[in-house]
Image 1 (cartoon, one colour):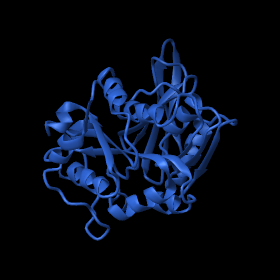
Image 2: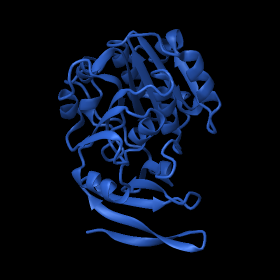
Image 3: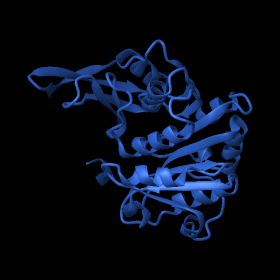
Length: 289
């Protein structure tokens, strides 16, 4: 059963929506600065921000970085076929639909109750070609036809941790199967010192893709704090110069690591297999305060 609580937006009271979903307690909090924008939290952890009037607006740092990858995955405005593992509030699928009209997209989100909440409170554009499937991310990916996707975006967190079965080389084999030869894989990762998870994820991607880049706050890369990093991989050369320029010009600038520097960053970490995979580390409580 859902409940609401009031939030102030200008002079009018706008109710937040609070509702139990499969993954915990979901909260849709109105943005005081944007009339039809909302932030989704699960058990107090921010998951997504959506502006229904301007779906091309990306508020969260990591979503802006994924937005840059989406922008550079194909010529401007060209429709793409995209798979989103992890739905949240469907922010990035809405972004693709707004910036690349006529794109065909699939969202795979395990939390069926969350999907219902988002569909009800933050409805998708009925003209957008977006299909939402309530399923485990890896099971849903297995149903994508071979070579179908221009883009596979992975942003899956359960209890603020990426599930173990989405961190392995075998999982990336499924990603590669679903991607076109020119396709791009992008994943939102989260880690903190000593960055063992992040190093392992880079080594795993390097075992499956020849071209890699990592986009992150320099403080995260130096192991100074817990935070997000966006890993990008492809069989074809990545648009590194433009990705670097865009990341550096963001309100919260990020650095792009690639090549020898990225290899050195792994520190000799080995690729992760299904047999040895573990979930990403839980963020410290201070991250969401």
